[in-house]
Image 1 (cartoon, rainbow, N blue to C red):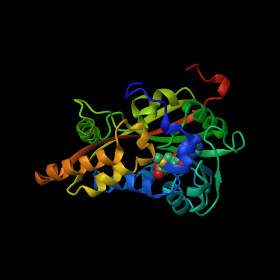
Image 2: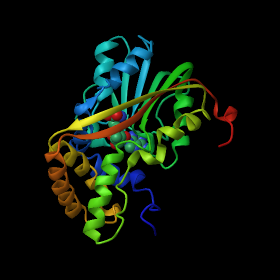
Image 3: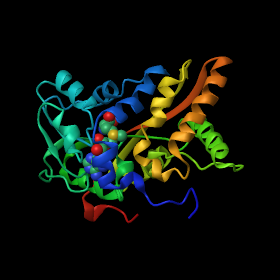
Image 4: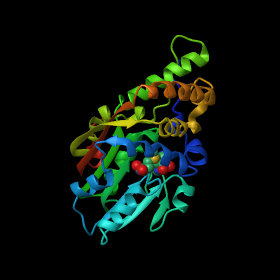
Length: 279
Ligand SMILES: C[S@@+](CC[C@H](N)C(=O)[O-])C[C@H]1O[C@@H](n2cnc3c(N)ncnc32)[C@H](O)[C@@H]1O
């Protein structure tokens, strides 16, 4: 099997719930790298600015550590806000209404929800179409879906740094690519896929640059993929150490710039399953 042609460990539910998202720490470390991003995008704020629904029902599917739940509850105090996630342990640390559920089978009535969020999570599904059809099913005809994900070219500098270190660890000319979760539901394809389930789709590209002058936040970001270390095709800790050495040398010359490419996608007018065009 080639390095680029592995099965989808990013959708393995046991791995997701027992390792990757058993505790908040890896996800929080991964997201902390964005503290160094310019412009700094306030994703929950952008979602709220683009949607009205002051009294409505919001369902945050794959709510993780509750980043969006807290903001929606504080800025839309009259809304009913429900967090849903596959990880019972992440949910246990949250407050307010929440339920352990799979995005592909939502425990919600048809046509009962005003806003569904699926933020940086559809790439964890074997079949994102199923989750999108579920979102369309539970939404009211005037309801909205919000999705976020990354471009295939997001943080390309980190891909190159990892591949170089991995090549040296393996003694090969070219190292395997690092695990890139969003590649399975990349920003480049998102609008087309979502368009199979919603009549109106608009995309906001959020490009930026992360600039770091110390290795720690970058190493913590790489380390947050440890749950998938067996998928990297290279001894993970050894590669991480090699990356650290390389980073220290690079940073002697000045800060490291990492290009970020994300997208925020708004979808309206859910199609009924029977209306959805074939993939
Ligand atoms: C990268 S985190 C994103 C968390 C949050 N949406 C955010 O943007 O901060 C992905 C989340 O999706 C959850 N998840 C993965 N597969 C899921 C599924 N099939 N159904 C519901 N949640 C899922 C994970 O447990 C994790 O909390």
